[in-house]
Amino acid sequence: MKYLLLLFFAISACTAGVLKDPVQGYKDGDRYFHIPGDDGKLHLVDAEEPVDVEFIEEYTRNSANNAYWLFTRSNPNSRQVLVQGNAGSVTNSNFHFGKITVFLAHGLNGDGGNEMNTKLRDAFLQNADVNVIVLDWNRLANQGYTTARAGTAEVGRGLGRFIIWLVGLGMSYDRVHLVGFSLGGHLVGNAGRETGSRVRRITALDPAGPFWDNDSNRLVRTDGRYVEVIHTEITFTGFRDLCGDADFYPNGGSSMPGCSLTITPLSCSHGRAYEYMASSVKYNHLLANQCGSLNDAINNRCTGSLNPMGNSDINKSRAGIFRVNTRQNYPF
Image 1 (tube, rainbow, N blue to C red):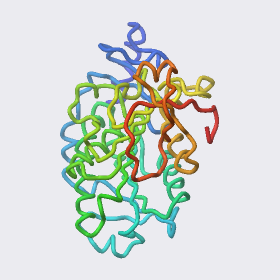
Image 2: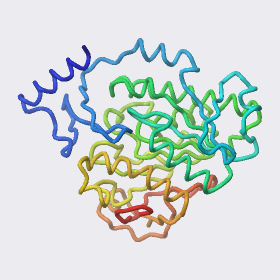
Image 3: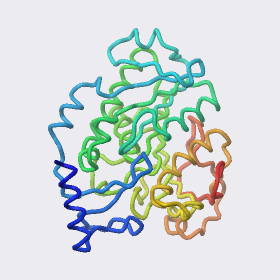
């Protein structure tokens, strides 16, 4: 019934001329618009769709609804499931407390096995001998946007409590790197905040934009000891403003090279964030000039010294606004 109603709203909105062309994006006051999900498709959003609070409470009440999949060089493609509260699930796995641990968090309509997770997992494991833990929160992430967005912060806090538990077993905050895409960008911010901002590095990949401007749960630079943000679709899908210690605006933050020829350019530009990250982890070659302002970054007026965007360096520390111009195709 929910989908029939959305179809009715979509048809009505189209005839009324208020359903936004996905190329134009969302403007304040629009009720109906499209947003790209992790699946690369555009999804219709009704901004007034009620948040399913009961579902969020049911989901977040049980920490087991968040699945944690461990991948290492000993099991690069076959997941080992870690269960919060079950120390044996960790000690009997390939998890190594002395190594860096990278956590990956997907976004809307995503799941633990989607392209974003597999590309980043493979890049990190090929680059270094690390633990990679994929957070799968697909049951909530595949609700409507209003509900998935409203539940993002609490899922993040659940991840934070999982990290605290692992630290109690012997993991170090100094070797924790949180990486989140879209809604996952705000999710990992809340995870870092839950730990008292002790995690060493957070990387947010085009954190979601719609309805996050005035949300106190959105990503901020104090969520971790170092917070880096890669903005690739600031016209609509991703968050436009500065929200990290270092904010990178590749190609000015929108219309990524090669995306104009695709069927869904907004989705393509949004997804470039994790593609750039995966490429930079492997090659550390996307060197960005420092900018004097966000306007300079958008308008390609950055001539400051170079700083690598992305990569796997757990000890990054340089702050500022940066721009790098990329090529159309991998490795960009």
